[in-house]
Amino acid sequence: MKKHRFHFTCFAVCLCIQAVSLSAQNMDDHKYEVGLRLGGINFDGFNSFSAIYKKRLDNGKFRRISGTFGGINFGREFRRSSFSINAGLSIGNEKRRQVGKKTTYYTGPSFSMNAGLSKQEGFDANWNLAPGLGYILGIQYDFSEYWAVNLETIPGGAISLRQFTGSEVGVNVGVSFTSNVVLSLMHKF
Image (cartoon, rainbow, N blue to C red):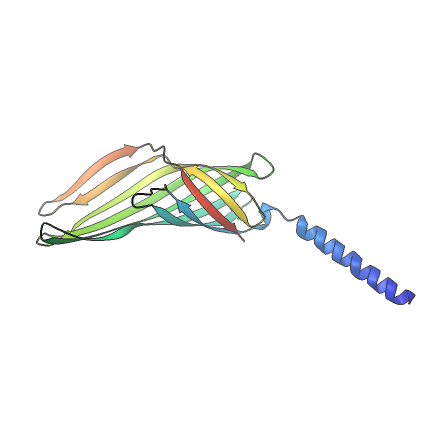
């Protein structure tokens, strides 16, 4: 009987040690984050969204890749059909600093490439290509071990290359400082 109690006690102690070590895990134990980003909520029309993937490089540093799908549009106006597609890709780095028990502030550079193609019946296809450079300013709140909410903005600039119907390639240079804030729901694993 004493032998069974000894084994049960050893088993219970091992379980307690395992439970304590599991509960001691924090955000540093997660190597990857995947999420859905919402660029705005519009009840009357198109809502922009993108997917984002983050991978830990070093302690407090992450590489991030986000893809934006601007949409596919088909239309028919003035007896002519039209088609357009827009997409983008952004790659950047984050450096994180803990500012609270569950809150992290992050910053870093971001490079983006946006592309679009449109075609109207009876005309040549138009395309545009816009490489850009921005700086990430964001805050992350971990509301559980595996889930977090991000709030960020990326002010920056871009150069736009466009080809219009029947014309040469045009270059538009513009700098955009945005106050758009993006909300992201992230899963950490």
